[in-house]
Amino acid sequence: MGGFRLAAARRRRFTLSASLVLLLCAPLWATGCDGRGGSPPASDTLSASPAPMASAALPGMPKPVDPHDLYAADRPGHLVDAVKRFPSHVYVPNLRSDTVSVIDPATYRVIDTLKVGREPQHVVPSWDLKTLWVNNDLGNSLTPIDPATGKAGPPIRVEDPYNLYFTPDGRYAVVMASNLRQIVFRDAHTMALVKAVPVDCAGVNHADFSANGRYFIVSCEFSGDLLKIDTARQAVIGHLKPPGTPGMPQDVKISPDGRTWYIADMTRNGVWVLDGDRFTPPRLLPTGKGAHGLYVSRDSRTLYISNRGEGSISLLDLHSGRLTGKWTLPGGGSPDMGGLSIDGKILWLSGRYHAEVYAIDTSNGHLIKKIKVGSEPHGLAVYPQPGRYSLGHTGVFR
Image (cartoon, rainbow, N blue to C red; front, side, top):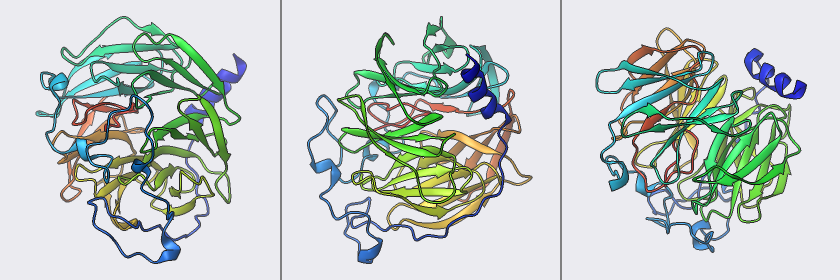
């Protein structure tokens, strides 16, 4: 247990420090997210391989809505029948308070506070969209929330659930057991243990899946590594450390066309740009101090990057791979994790070290509201959301 406490303490005591940023070129894609051909310089193109969605998909994985856009099912207001009856809420896990604040997005007010397990890290929609799972990391449990009522149910025993994902075929939950140094596959419905995969890195935390679902990329925040995991074999098939000073990689997001991966890095103050198929050393794109969360706009054109250490959000054009702007929170803040409103007009982010939540207008970056919540709000989920199924985290839908 000593090692477990040490890892948890490292998370609690960590403060951002300045680090040298390598200025490297961002990649440009051969094909835009809307399917139109681009004309980037050959040296800036990550991969000349066939479109990833053209290759054989993981058996049982739903067929993509658009072979050129992984997020085509996430358009504004496109709610499937399974979630249409759910009231719209923002669920905020307060890591130090052991609670979840429930916000009504229509009034910007906290309407309920749910008592959950010790150190809740993220609120995660299930693959079938019917349940929200609160990841009680040090409580070694998952608390289910019924999104129809907004009420919590009895917790389920699961060891070290720092973060939670679901395989694209809906068969398995994937627990990022950070303190245990394991990636744990469980039954997606019962959470019964299937397989624990040991990893040779410290602090497994965030992930995203390839376009065909055959593999996923995982970040290891404490050792600075990236892993590549075979979904069907449930095995590590790649391990690399980005170049330069070891960083602290966080959120992971794949591009709409499935060719490029972005990994936020808190101490390298930017996002790594990676070819996931080749899994070669990535390049760094500086964005701001403490780059942490990554969110794709409803039209699949913009990646919102929360820079927790400087209270800003960077905007990356997902067609060109270039930064187009930055929004700074008035009065400062610590934007962390979150998601978009159903219509995509508001970006909701937790303010990790300010005990607040930010509602930001995505048309111009205007701060609509700061809402006080519990201590150290972390992986908040806006729910319900457009999309046919959930890959986990705070809401990765396809």
